Length: 124
Image (cartoon, rainbow, N blue to C red; front, top):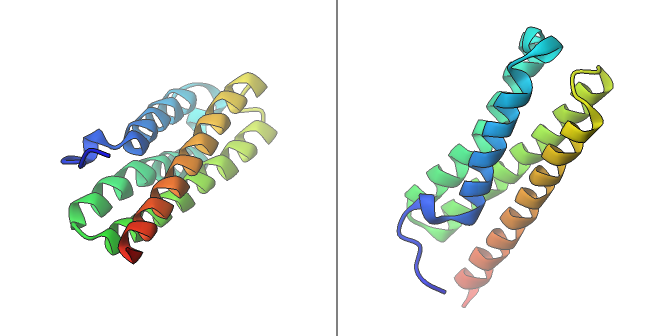
């Protein structure tokens, strides 16, 4: 596996960046845009995923990186939880919900795999 030189090369970071864009698009119109609490919270949670991947990478140690990836994974779960609230309140159509939920689930799986890789690598 080639060495990652910059956080922008990390597939999970790219996935997180896409999740942020999706969340912002979903929350910029209609009822969702007027629910400032939920709108701001889901936006912050999505940004947290992306930011924690970058920050963890920049820390320069596997242990720190894996810790930040776990935080990012938790924030990805937070996004999914808030998507359910938005669906229940009628802020999202089922199709919109499904697309972003699947992206968040895929991102969480990617983070889990990356965490496992880092932990295995530090045990060798």
